[in-house]
Every structure is written in C-alpha cells, then in structure tokens.
Image (cartoon, rainbow, N blue to C red; front, side, top):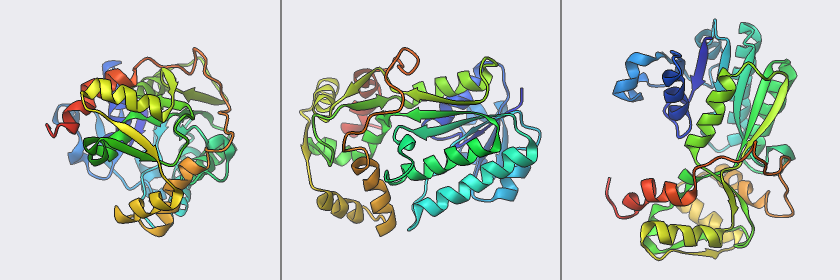
Length: 293
C-alpha cells in the first residue's frame, strides 16, 4: 500500500510517520521543507516538498498514492477559513484526479456543528467536501490536544491558566501520539469502507479545574485556573500578535462549544485512548515549565 502523509513533522504527523515505518511501510511525506524531518527518518521516507495550498503541487505529490493522511495546515492569516477552503480544494483535487481510494482526515470534536465554532468550521468544510468525493474516508474527531498546553508555558510558570470556558465543564483531552495510533491503524486496516467518523477522546473527560490539579501533581508546581471574559482573551490573543480574523477564529473554537454542546459520538471503548494527561505532563511538560530543554 502506498501511503502519503501530510504535516509529517507536526504533533500528530511525526508519530503517524514513525508508526508506519515500524509497520514496514515507506510513506511518502508532503511538507514545505524536507530538511525539517528528523535525521534518522530521512532515509525511511520519500519526502516531497509541497505547499498544501497549491492544488497542482498536491496533485503531483500524491500521484500513485492509495491512501492519504490529510491534515489541514495551520494558518496565521487574517482570513483563516479562506485558507482552510484553499487547502480543501487541494485535497479534493488530489483525491479526485489521482483516484485515491482512502483518506484519513484529522478533524476535531465540534466539526459536527458545521458552523459557529471558529477555526473548526474550516475542518467541517473539509469533511463535507471529502464526503462529496465519494472516497472511503474516516474523519478523526479529536479532543483537545495535551500539547496545546505548551502554548501557555509562561502562564504555567506563573501558576495560573486563564480560559473562557466554564471551569467545571468537562471535555475530551487527548495525546497527539494516541491520535496518530488511531490514524495509522485506520490507514493500514482493510476492515472499513464508506464514510466513517472516529472520535478520539483520550482516556477521560476533564474539567479545567481537574486539569489544574493534574498539572500541579505532575509538575510539582502549584497551578490554578481562572475564567476570564471573552474580551480579556481577545486582548491576550491580540497581544500575542494574532490578526483580528485569527483572534475570532481561535476564540470561536471555545465559545462555539460552550453552550450545551454534546459530541456526536459519545465516549465508548472505540473512542477512548490510553495516554493520561498526568503521564504526558510528567514526561513532556514539567521540564519545559522548569525551563529545561
């Protein structure tokens, strides 16, 4: 089976690539700069330099591919949803022109709403566009990445996380490595066809208060959490250098799931993965909080 992987150096993608290599597959990896691949991995893959927003380049890079792991690339522009639409055109062209038979798409919890969830609306657009191609597709509806906490190292070092969600609202938290395991399994498995939605919920739904308790225990630092207003979060995101459009798209991912949201797929043995936040934080986060590389 010829498998192509996008964002092969990302939080999920680099685990997908490693898993496929361990399975005996030599994947084709699509990325802007092949030099960013880990040195030990460069001889195990076929690297193709490509801009995912360039539909012609994506079509050329995926010629002869049987299965594709697609991740919409991150965007920092004023109009994130327009960028998602451009990336969607690329994957639809690739699937259609090259008759790629199977796609595993990294989506998100919340995409089932289709509208009103900020950047996640872009993922929903990709889902519906892939559905329209008739390809066998699995949409991975992923929970909140543990690695998102790495974007708040300064706040963690100061001892307080600030969020706009209710502090006692539970949500799915998941390790990117566990998402990659599900993605690779789906890419390799012949046991499914048609349109599938596979939620990836991590081992437990956690409230922000519980997250603070877990991080305190795992890092040895007292960490609390407080709820702030949407406008206060907007100010923080602007201060971080985000454009107005990106600020609203990022904020919308929280505010759009704040009121009575229930995921399309409930937590079951099929959606539950094993890596706990405590284990991940102990292995990956405590050193970074302490300022150790």
